Amino acid sequence: MKKLLLIEDNSDIRETTQEILELADYEVFTAANGKQGVELAKSTKPDLIICDIMMPDLDGYGVLRILSKNPETSNIPFIFLTAKAEKSDVRKGMNLGADDYITKPFEEAELLEAVEIRLKRSESLKKDAHTSLEGLNEFMEEARGLDELKDLSKDRKIKAYRKKEVIYREDDYANYLYYIVSGKVKCIKTDGFGKDFVNDIYGKGAFIGYMNLLEDGEYHETAIAMEATEVAVIPKQDFRSLIHKNRDVAANFIKMLSGNLQDREKRLLQLAYAPVRERVADALLKLKDKGLTPNLSPEQLKISREDLASIVGTAKESLIRTLSELKKDGLVDTDGQEIRIMDENGLKKVTAGF
Image 1 (tube, rainbow, N blue to C red):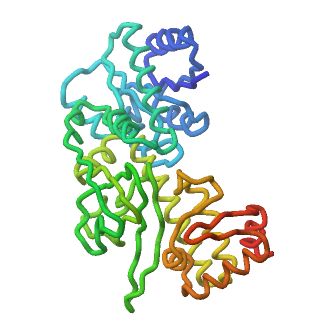
Image 2: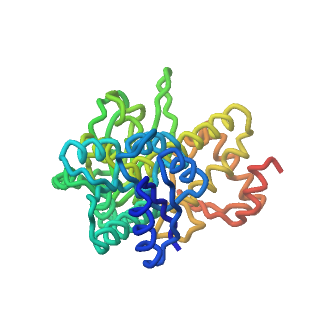
């Protein structure tokens, strides 16, 4: 049962609206003012909030501002409920991040339809990363939400890249978000001595280049196709409009960004302290989890020794020697560029230092 929070200072409207929602099989929490509403939102974590605008002490705008700054409540769908219908009020609410706007008096069907639509869109945006171009189109369509976003991303282009072709370069001005339709891409960082370090490898269904789009700057790494690859190119302004006007989309990318930063922090610690054997085992397990070789079994990886050495942060010779040791121990098997994981639990023990 979905949980809704209704914030309304008029007791008659609050009780009538609560009854309508409960008859529609929603669990409804109510607050008589904005301050109570903020506390209830934090404690109950509702699936959606319906909030009046004109309230004493803390109005609906203030409630939305406070909840939008809290990571635990910032992605909750938010519908304004108000007797005022001037365009300036609608615009102010939407610019703050509201998902919808219902004017009192309203029809029962109008209220329930708005609630259902927002809950469905929220659920859609919480799904795992899409694995097809159709999934991307659905993601972008659901993310628009507001009328102002209807015309965005209509001219999204698909570009094809050959193996080893550069998609974007480090220090290029960041103008686009890229979505991998097919193929594999490695993102590398070059140090002051000209040595390349692979930050990460991405496959079908991944977004790349988003870390640099929220600031008017350059890409901090170079993206290179590892095989024949197709990507959808999304203009920066489309992406920034989605981030700024839809809190669900912003939360989605914040999670991606947070995970990326946490992973890189862990890798830096490994490079500083972990032995090569542990780093190789960890890299193999992560590549397996990414599912970057769809034509092979999950245990099979296809990657050049140069790229794997760059991910691990060691010389190619040291990598080959370590792979030979892991093969001798029965943890992996090798055949050309293919590496088969024979004992996943054994590799996990290696990453733990055993």
